[in-house]
Length: 133
Image (cartoon, rainbow, N blue to C red; front, top):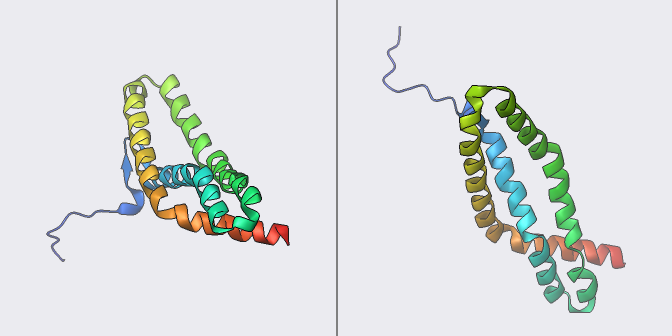
C-alpha cells in the first residue's frame, strides 16, 4: 500500500458553486468573441483599404459565431441554473453568487478579447476577400 502525501485534485470534475470549469471557460470564450466583433471588422477595413466598406460591415461574421456558441452552450445552462434556483430553496442564495462568478468570467473574456482581436480581423479580411472574389 502506497501512502499519499498530497491531496487528490481531479480538475476534470472541478466545480465552483455548482458550475463546471468548462462552462466558465466557455463563457469567457464567447464573451471574448462577442467583444471583438465590431472592432475586428474595423481593423480589417484598415488592413484592406480596397475592401474597407465590405470589411467594416462584416462584424456579423464574428458575432454570428458568438451567437451560435451562446445559444448552444451558454443559454441552456443559465436556464437550468435559474430554474434550479427557482424550484429549490437551498439554491436561491447561491444564484447571486453564481451571477457574480459569471460577470467575473465575462471580465476575463474581455481581457482575452485583447489577444484575439488581430486574428479575428485577419479572419474577417480573409472572408471578405473570398466573398468579393
